[in-house]
Image (cartoon, rainbow, N blue to C red):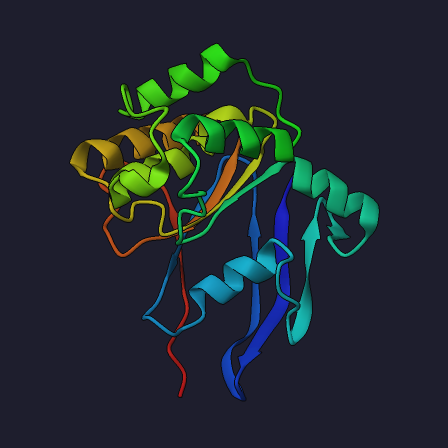
Length: 210
């Protein structure tokens, strides 16, 4: 199932960030979104997932606009979006955050699976501690656990997923992305850090416009 941007344009505070951006994200493909701060990378990702309306153009999923309700439901069921902020509740534990996210997205998981995924992400012994007491890197791992839970996902849209991760965390995530691509998943991501282990990605660069 392809995700397609068709002549997308974005305007913020009377400044044109980008215009007439067209590309297709097919199964098994990784698109690496590049550009200076302020070029519109986050805005483009938010348009792709339907959080923000484009000034012009449209987003298609499987050839149909994501503004159609039936397409929207299918897209939501097959999408994982992780923004540049971890979006975890600081008052809830890693386990509670994971359980809540899974329930919110209709993902059926056992308690054992949640603890297993958190262990894979290096959070052994921290699963039941409020996230407000964890480091930025640990909170990022809590957010990234979503990529292990939702087996039905076919599209990952990731905004700075490597933020606050150490070398081992970056390698773990890259290997997981690699495995997802091998299964036919598609990924578009931004990163200020070079992709160390991922290969075969397609660059998409946004120019900063005054």
